[in-house]
Length: 440
Image (cartoon, rainbow, N blue to C red):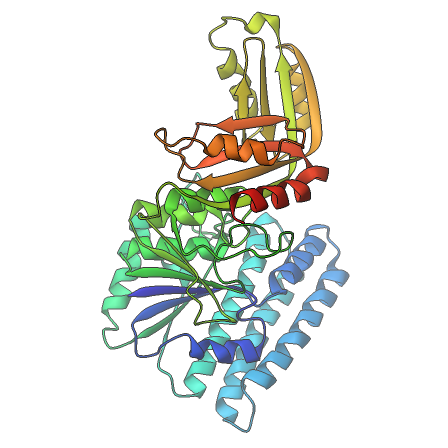
């Protein structure tokens, strides 16, 4: 069985929804994971924010505006000329979910209801698509993700729970080829409606692949796989045919927007290949992420903006064991991940991209020594096979940016990554220079 995930743009209109059958083979056993229609989640966030601020009037206006859009979707996806019954079913789906949203707006609204509101996008897209398939005579089963997707008290997915609760449903429908389910949404350890946060629907697809030992996970987006550089900035980029899981995770974390890094890990753990494909060009090969990859080769360059560099300098650090532990504990207390780190005898420099608690962090770090901040920084990440036995790659990378000031260099922490910290103003020049030296 294969897992096929389609993002918001792939189901962004009735026309796009209908075109999915050019990709989905109804004769092949598969689970299709759908995101909310593009724009829906943003609208639901607006609705939720209004209701959290107790602006009931604005919340209801936003709900009605979004419903008007879905009324149009039903009219185009299920025209009366096809079958009045299916048109009525589709309208009933829309009416049900928006009446439910209105009921939430008229009651006490908390963070729990906020998660319920955000779940409506995926519930709408999957149910409407299921009705559409019925209207054209394509058999399918709608799988409620809330019945088998669960996270624990640490917000980590419980894969054995998914296996235990999904497998019997699949076995009860041995003749069914096509199953439709929601991405992103799940239940938490209290049984409440929640979501996967990191990676959303991509994460769902990878988790399902791991839970049922799928043949392959396919992530369908609007770009033909991961490219060897940012196509918005650099001309002549090319898709990468093959990546290892580790290479893909590095690229995803450091700026390749096509895939969230968290989405790689379940498939990697259970050795399920992940294929990145383009809905607009279904025949394109895309990118295959697996345990195999070309050795001794630089694969791609990515960049991550919004970085802040923090330098802690202290003469007391010299030969003082436990210093780094104390520094890391500060970031742990404020739940702030660290991207890069370099050390010397008397100083440590590190980077973060989550700065909500930065003032409090700096206040605590001041007790260790002097603290300097550099904002508006970018991490440029060069990914490939940089094993210890390889030579020349670091020199090639650094020579490519010798005319650009480099704030930090991280090399050796991973066999797949050389990272440079530069001013964001120099990002475009750095990406283009690296591309010309490495790939052209």
